[in-house]
Image 1 (cartoon, rainbow, N blue to C red):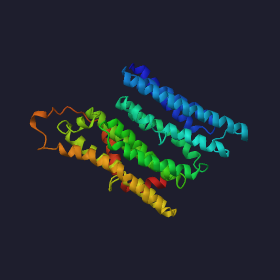
Image 2 (tube, rainbow, N blue to C red):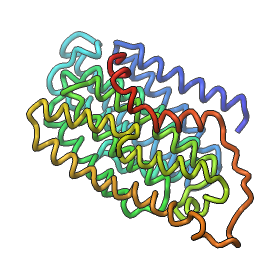
Image 3 (cartoon, one colour):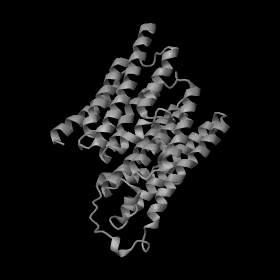
Image 4 (cartoon, helix red, strand yellow):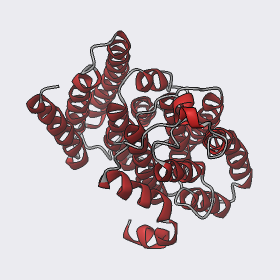
Length: 344
């Protein structure tokens, strides 16, 4: 892609997200979401492949449907209340706006577009779609969290955790694995949204860090399949080792970064006297733990002396400082969790 066009698209992404973050008016928030949607489509189709075109079409149709629902609900709410304020919603439109935002995020059962879209686009665009594109809808959900129906949030959260774990088990494509990982993590965030919006924000920040670290690592070794990642040890032993740790961090194993949001969410659920919900959530997360451990196991099997000398490659992988920084954050933030929570 032309560097000038790429810069314009990235600048449009930044402007769209910033506009939504700064707005207290539904119309301005909707315009920011639309700018975001239109700016990422050229990035999806920068590789002229039928799979990329199909992914961009699916993404556009899904996001356009969600945006139309947001605009119609906000208009009807303004007609009823006389206000366009984001925090002033009447009863029937709160649910439709919440569902539209969850559709934009890719929460189950409105998740069917996400794995297919991420599978059809490059890793760099998949990184943007999995992290940056979720900032604006998540911010709007946080702003209306006190108005959203608790049963809806719990149902969507539990369904997303189950489908995020179940869908990732049988995958051989790493981009689809990351898509189902995203669905599962978003389920944790929505589950605790009504009880503690600060924990949702904290979880979202850590999810963004860990997902970015994983995508940067995959981009460094140019792997999109489990079969490719299983032979990447000779290329970059240190990077593969840190990738295994990032996967375990995404799974939520202590003492890595991903353990802190899960621990705090379970403690908050127990504090709210929802022990049954906490127990079901922990059991559902075992599905996701299985496919993270499966990926880690595939990497461990290729460590010397299991790999034959004939399949070794020259170590030409270059690790960028950004990859190193994100990986460090994805592994070592756990001791600093109380400090981050105080800041939030």
